[in-house]
Length: 307
Image (cartoon, rainbow, N blue to C red; front, side, top):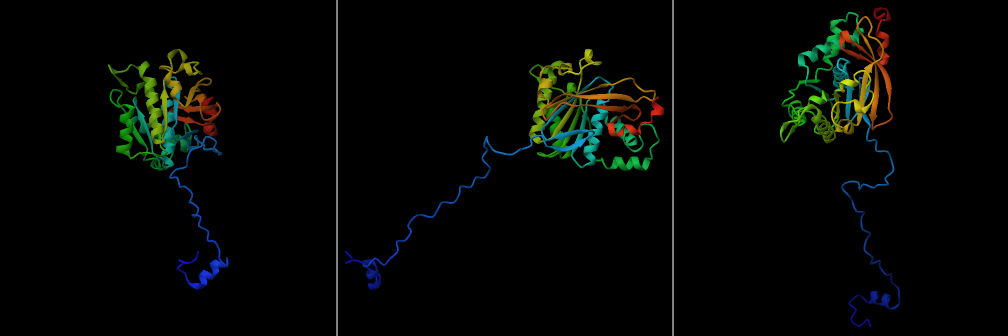
């Protein structure tokens, strides 16, 4: 049987006498399959934290991709609160902007100047100008936009922020809008009326927030019959999509009488919050300086002046 074996005599002897080792002819184990991205599993353990805030501005935490609505009667201080949020976000070097359909950039800058006085010296005391100017310089990159209620749609605002002001395509940024009910929405027959366009505007803002991971907050109007008592989602002006589209809805109203110095006690309710439980907390509006004061700042208000 070994007649035609072509090996050496020594190798042939080993084969005949069983002095050999059978080599392992099995193929080497296959390497693990490498996936470019982790495959999603419904049972993956851990907490992905979809609502992890990237910053807290003027008392409110903000997370990427969320839409917040801020509802109140006229004159309560919605615009000033939005302006303080943008001011604080800019000081922390986050891209931040406020687009306003009611006020000019000059009016917004004036309010920012008065707010800086309030932060340095409280609601009424004289403020040192060098400290005020230093505080404003830290927020010099905030974008103040005067918008046109006939032309500046949500898409126009988005393009403006990205192409003219270098807002990130994907990343944390704060955008405030004053206010939702004046955002122009174009339908088949032209511009939609105020009651019909609010829901579509809210949906467009939410999509923009999710597309870029920005945090958006928009002031929303109340129905006139709810100016004095509107602590309910049905009080928001517009169709049913307005509260439905928002991730969070806040309501601000007066809490007590206006003091002699012009400062107004306020209270804030969360009417809806997809990120956690509802809250209720006090604020003050220092009217002389357009400043929404948080509870830790109440001590700056001299009770003798307000008595």
